[in-house]
Length: 107
Image (tube, rainbow, N blue to C red; front, side, top):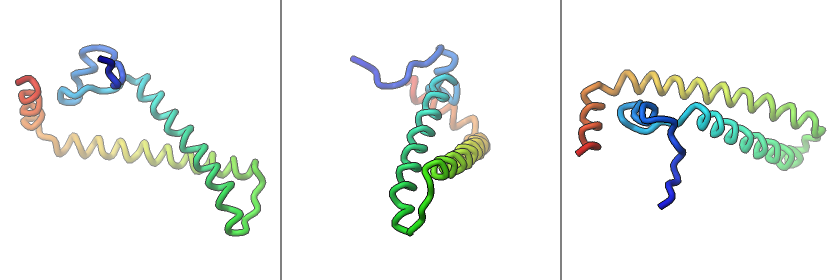
């Protein structure tokens, strides 16, 4: 049977985060770059399609520059939100809850 999950780098990495499998840094980078590239293309296509509806005439190089700016802002925002949620998770996940989750998975 073929597993559709990403391959984990080692047992230690697979057991981080309360016993849940975590992605390797390489796979996280691949996922982030893929997501960003797809978002960039969708945003550029949307601008090229929607701007004329509002009678906005923008040259392609300006459209690309606008998309680059919005993409950078989006990546920074996404990073900040992820870090915030990681901090919140650490504060609201008591160690006893993590231990009980690990015990349930090993039973």
